[in-house]
Length: 203
Length: 148
Image (cartoon, rainbow over all chains, first blue to last red; front, side, top):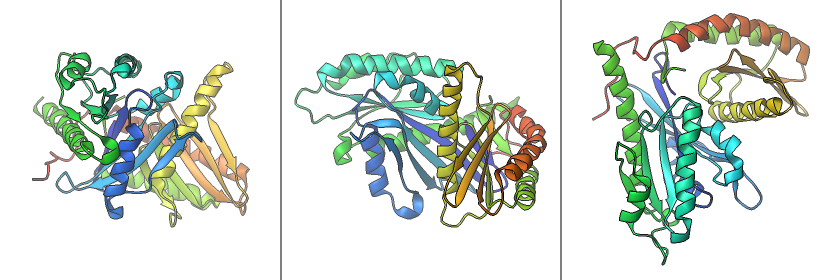
């Protein structure tokens, strides 16, 4: 749920990076953290295990001026990908405004990608949300793998909802496709916010 | 839950004033109001060297975790959480179903005082938050233009 504060002229939106374990969600955030000047971001918080697996979430706040007269804060979160962390994964989705689904391009991870996508839909449903309501994009990560599945195949597997969404090829560890993905989802979230406002104004 | 939450300047003023009153009465250091999704609504008091946004996010995460723990033992939720440090302490309490009040205080005051005044503040904040949460997704102060 975005929060619009007319006193401090601030809009805050929550973007969640979702996807199976080890697909590169945290890597996306780490790259963004590294590249964005310190004045536009705060420190990144990682609740991870010793083995660098996300235990609860990673959190990276960004500040932009995308909306005239308002400071726009994007709060980027990742979820733990491992199947058995579903309780915490669901908690992170609370109040979500936009989702980046990070899929692993390795052939042998296609089942995991698909299962994680279904799991995301189920967890959204628990908050009364569907993929019709929430803006989201797909990121096909690890395109440099020798056994990467074709993009068309992955798109066919994961972009099956009524509303087709943009997808991005990425090699997050080298930063390729990371900002393209972030720009697309942040734009979609703001457009959705503004459309919601104008739709209500007409009635 | 609405898709977007709007806080008007008047509501913000009231929230800020209630948090300041809480700090004055309880002698605590910092008070933060947030929703259970981790969105910051107000921060008052001492904020040097702390990042209220990150505190809000972690407090919400911590509270969500304890709520799940509560469910596992058959409780609906734990409405209060307290973290004790050597010098600074954190008191987190739920306000209704959607908001949390975080109070950071030093050992110069007591947990009892903080708890008492946090409860009073929560009572005063509840109807205000209810109005904000029930507001339909409509900008109360005109349209919001995207930056060119």
